[in-house]
Length: 106
Image (tube, rainbow, N blue to C red):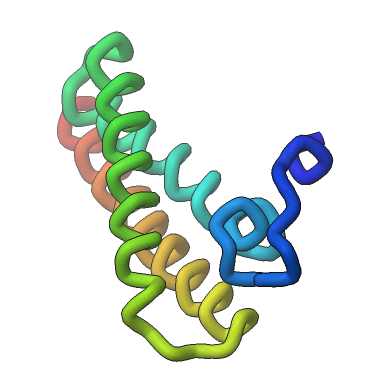
């Protein structure tokens, strides 16, 4: 549904609507957002604080990724897999942080 509603990229695979809705980056960012929400919830112990804060931080990360993407001269799929790997590394780190915080609080 998302890809049908996006504007045409005019053949440019690095255009943000196409790049961020196709390929592995979408899934890596989704896992990162979930892990960030869990970690913030574990640290703050308040869902009402963790949810909007995680939305803001994921949005800021997405904007930072967009800014950094223009600085690298990598082919389309190489860039997607590199960005996905960065999101997955951050996801693993956040999962570890959430685990440690939850274990300490128990």
